Structure formats: C-alpha cells, structure tokens
Image (cartoon, helix red, strand yellow):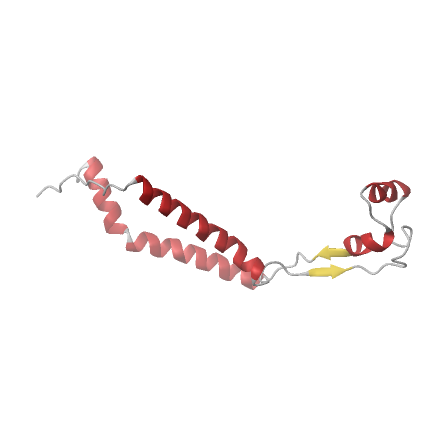
Length: 128
C-alpha cells in the first residue's frame, strides 16, 4: 500500500507573524534569563593596586592617562573599570555535564523521530 503524498497544513500570514513573534520572545527570554537571574559568568575579580587615586597608582602610562581623560574619566571614576577583571575559570565537570546533556538531547531527538524520518525518505525516494 502506497502512502499518500503529504500536504502540510496551510497557515495564514497572521499565524506566521504570531509564530515568529512568539519564537523571537522565546529567544530573548532564553538569552536574558541567565543574566537576569545572575547565573551567567563567574563574576569579577578586583586587582590589588598601590593607589586608586592616581593614574600612576593604577598602573596607567601617560598615553593611557590622556585617553582616559579624553573619555572624561578621573583616576577615581576609572579605578573600578581598571581594577575589575572577569573571572574566566570554569569547571571541567560542568562542561562534561553540559556536553552529555546536549549530545543526549540529539540522540533522543533522532531516536524518537526515526519513523518520521523514514516516512519522509520513503515518500521522497521510495522504499528500497
């Protein structure tokens, strides 16, 4: 018995617009949720400097000092920017867990959709 040709359901332009806006909202939510919940990044590390009230104490050369001043900064206002660094350390265990979850997701995706893929291939290229 041959399968009938698959016809996808028709969707209106308004339905496509609603779907697109909904997906866009989901993407923004997925990107901003970790930031909003303060789950992103390992934080910042403050560097120890000799004196936060002078450019020399902050380790800035004359050229760097001139550039900071062009931007409207004084040693006091620039100190927090100069002395804070991002902490880029990470946990190998968390990296492995993330990799296992992602690979596991794709394995499950292909296992559960195996029959659908076979039906699509059979429709396009026939049964062998």
